[in-house]
Image 1 (cartoon, rainbow, N blue to C red):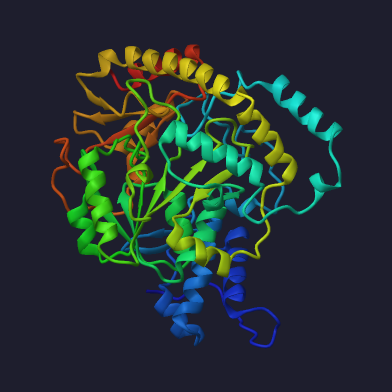
Image 2 (image 1 turned 90 degrees about the vertical axis):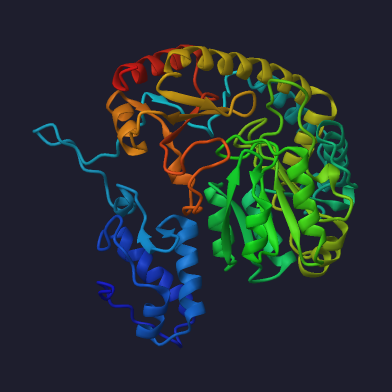
Length: 479
């Protein structure tokens, strides 16, 4: 392993912690372009020895770099400079196009972006939201602009409590709910509640951002393979983990829905030891197009083992940075002791607007409209992909905002994504969400572990764009 091609000069008396100095040195070199894309960094052990600091200090610096996206942590391979083509130009002006037609400007987005995270904002009830906001500000008083309760306003927590019980079967009281500005904040808060260095198990493939947050908290993370029923509990037991992070209603990104038998296995695993808990991320439970919505895992929890997390960002708008966490009673005391002094991260005005939007029925009406719109797009995409079935297995339908295409012809994800990009279409590779090989030769659905799988989201596209985008894929993939 060669040395890091920069010199890190630590100043123990400089007023900043050692890990901050290491983090800033590496960050600045990446921004300046001195460390290149995909360049491997020294191992934490090597750098700690070289700088004569503790391994924990380097781990904290690397974790911060990973969280901010400057560095990628690749399991069993090490740390690499983030794969962002223009990252080193953060602080430099973008060059103009040259006479020869070449340009160093950022690449323009694909014309047809099948993002699994995009949603359709064309039907958002802007007039209603403005009316509620106006009425609230007209009647506002000094109390509205005060700090408010750390867990969030009691009115919104009561409304969320009723909503969750009616729509997801969640059994809770308002005192168990914590409101925060996004799931990221709630997961960071959970680290204070659960304690440091808790061993977490995650589904594989998984939600990468949650993994990055866990790693930034210095949590050891194990990846558990999935089958047609979700996370395999037999493999979970082998990890020795204390906490399992799962998405049982609609796993991201595979789209798997966990059956009741597997849910009971997970709950049994959690109840076997007092320190075990399940984190249920119910990120898009509102969108199901066939049958009744699946109840939450928390609805079956009789022992207080499930931490339930949800958000309004997907159901309403990404800018509505309001998420909620339902703590089981065994963890509530820990929250009040270790985190009760934290201020709420959501303004009281935003909480009041959202409370009225849900309480007065606008949210339910908007959801019903969007379910219909997304169902139309879902059905259209399935119809457009009908002649793909000889070349791809199509899965993940009837819920969420994306489908999965598994190649039958032995092509790689990179090959298929590159061909799509040549037609100005962006598709997403399952490999980008797969943290490490599970070791299983075959999954329960019969597909090999290394089969090319692509994710096609449809939420943010119009019906015309779906048809045109699939048409271009049909050509470049030679369907």
